[in-house]
Each structure stands twice: as structure tokens, then as C-alpha cells.
Length: 441
Figure 1: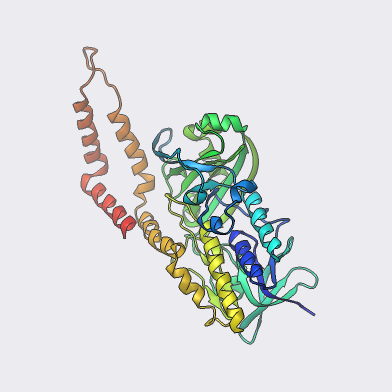
Figure 2: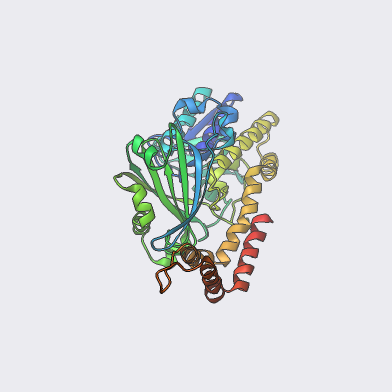
């Protein structure tokens, strides 16, 4: 006879674990399946975690050593073949309470912490178990089928929390094939002594830095971005690029990562490091048309499986959005449990609440900026190079024939000539206007 529970959750990431925690605290029997040896062993993200949702339920998380460093510096750079043009923000007063900023984190550590909280609340965690299809009866989801002996588990509700390429949502008929706009994230974790990291990045104690590298020399001028985040005694380095752009480049993911790591600007920050681990995963960058249905009869889709990500280079945000969706899904299921009704109609308050939350509103707003970037490739394959050339012209010290110095006015005129000749004042102005419209509206 198949095992039975109130809620079966496929995946043990942050969204899944916080949903399991709330459901178990609410008195429901919850089983959470993880395909790896432990939560986080098969998971990957860039490495920056926003903690507003986390702080609400676990305000003492910093003392649990589940995160690495609190980010005091955000740096945004454009790269050419050898040079960098950067804008940096450093806020030294980022101190407790921690809900107002971000941390670097490693999923192998953070996911285990959050899953442990769910277990302490009463949820059952089953590891080393692949679940890739639902059990359906009379048009509704009634459980899941795991690849193990006695693998059928019946449940009133199934939560699909198995990432961008959600086989659970697909088997339930809630989504189609992934579009080529989905982003491939590739990351390497390299070790470096803690004191060296703090000296190299001008940090003290548990302070951290998050560097983002846009277009240009980061990913061969394709739409995408590289990143470098400081952990306690390691550095996370990698990039994200749409599958379509990677296909057009015709390059292997590891080759592109090595090119980025060997860029003169990045190489200097990584000198003396030792590779520790390599990982890759899909980031669900999708239009509303490509998103799955968030609910069905007996099933709810959350986090990356629901396409909830803010992939724009200013924020690279997803984990907190997953946790927010896990909270709203769990609260909806608790209400459905009280009513004894687990139909799609009874679960519809979940997508309704989701669309009123920051998770959907941020996804929806910054999606326009992403679509603008797709239609303006010059922001990646031309402007980074040209803007760096402009900066080089403006800040060069040029001698005259008599050994004196060229007046700054001549440098300013040279910059203006370059803008007119290489960029086109009208074209540049229209592109910047399009970017401003996309960011504002």
C-alpha cells in the first residue's frame, strides 16, 4: 500500500524548506524529497541571498553560520578585452538587523540549515530520491512516484519545487518545453585564505563584496554577465548567459568560464586561488507566456519551477523570491486543508497573492528591461568597448610637440568626436532612452 501524507514536496531548496516548515508547524504531515545526498548537494546559485523573508521566520540565522558574509560593496563593471569601467557602492554601516541587505551564501550549507528547520518542525526529509512524475487520478494530482522501492506516495497536495526544468510541473501538464531565453548559470568555487580575501577586497570581519561584470569582455560580447562574490575563505566566480546566446557563440560553458577567469581584471582578483568545485544550473528567465500554470487540482508550483527570478544584473535575485512563494503556497494549502478542498479553484489564492507580492512585481517590472536588452545587443557587444575607449581618451595625458601637455579641452573634443563618429549621438540617445523607459515602466 502506498504511503500517504498531507503534502508531498519535490525538492529541498529554500522555497521548499520554508513551505515544509510552515506546513509542519501548522500540523500537517509533510514529506520533502531531495535527489542529492543532502539538501544543497545538487543545488547551485550565484551566491547572493536577500534575507527579508528569511529574517521573518529565523531572525537568528546569522548566528547559525548558514551564510558567508554580509555584502557591504556592490560593484558593476563593463569589460573590454583588457580594461574595466566600474561603478561601486560601499556601505560600511550595514549592520544588524540584517533584513535590510544581502549575504553571500553557499547552497550546500544554507539549504541544509533551512531543511533542518523544517525537520525540527516535524517535516520528513527523504534524500537520495529522484521524483520526476506525479500520480494522477480522475484528472487531478493525488501524489508522486519516486524511483525507489515502495516509491508511490499519495498526498492531498504536491508542491513542485524542483527547479527551472521542473519535471513535476511538466508531468502534471502545467508547463511545456523551456525556451532558449532560459539562462545557464556556470560557477566555480575557489579557495583563498580568509585574511587574503579581506586584504584583497578591502574587507573587515564578516564583510563581503559582490562584483558584477556586464557584457563586453565578460562573455564574448554576448548578452550575459559574469560575477565574483566573496565567501569566508572561498570566492564564487562564474557567469550567466541565455541558452540561445551560448548556442550562437558555439563555445563550451567551461571554456567560457576559463576565459572570464583569465581576463586581466578578474585574474588579478583570483591569483593564488585553488579550484574546489564546479557547477551549472538553469535559471528560469521566461516571459509570462512561457511560465507554467502555478496551480492545478492537487498541485502547486513554487520558486524556480514557477519561473520566479529577477535576473537583471542590478539584483540577480531569486532565492528570496522562492522563499516568498513557498510561504504563500504553504499558507494557501493550510487554508485548503481546513476547507477540505484541494482543487485548483481552492488553491487559486496562491497565484493571486503571488501577483500582489514583490516577487511577481519585481519579476514583471524587470522583465521589460531584459526584453529591451535582448533587442539592443549593442549594450553588450559594442557599448562596453566604446565607453571604455571614451574613458581612456578623456583621462589620458598627451604631450604636445614641445614636450608640454595637451589641454583638457582637446581631450574633451576628442571624446565628442569619438561619440559622433563611432556611436552616433542620435543612436546612443535613443538607446539610452529605451533603457530608461524599460527600467522605469
